[in-house]
Image (cartoon, rainbow, N blue to C red):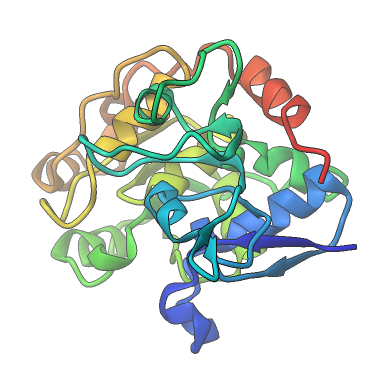
Length: 268
């Protein structure tokens, strides 16, 4: 029996060339964690939701106007002031901010914290580990793909610009081929963390991407979000300055977060 999973399909619903890898990572990770087949379901028919800033969709989990309960495993918030129903089965959420927005509150001890994208290395397990080929992987969010700084990155030797619309496995392989990653895509950073690739966020399209979700993600590690780079800093540093731009890199408790996510996966 398959798991009916909701994830954000976006324009990829009709165009395979526009499937954002972070969203489409969700069915692969859920399939790995469950050992069951996974199929897409709209939120009103889904059993579960996992990767993505999709907690606000829980309000539409109804059948014939009757509220339904979902299994939530690692989903996250995208803005302050949200309130999410406590009727659902909360096994894991992305971070502390999401946890605090659940109606009536959820005990920190009762729910795992972390984005299931951190299990990308477990999904890759058994495949050959790619050799390092690039100094830097540059991963623009899909709203940033045409930005000047992306074109600048493409012109630099030793830099691999990674398209979030590539197939999931191709993105995961490309990230592992890099010594460092700079990304405006949150799941570019999360997958880099999963594979232990030092990384830092770059803010390109101000106001078009939620900053709140990044704070939520890093809260699972008990750390503040590292300060964002700006395009001018990247453009001025050159490839030789990448290590200094990334700065001190640490994701405390990563293995424990991964293990708790797996242990929290629901038996459905």
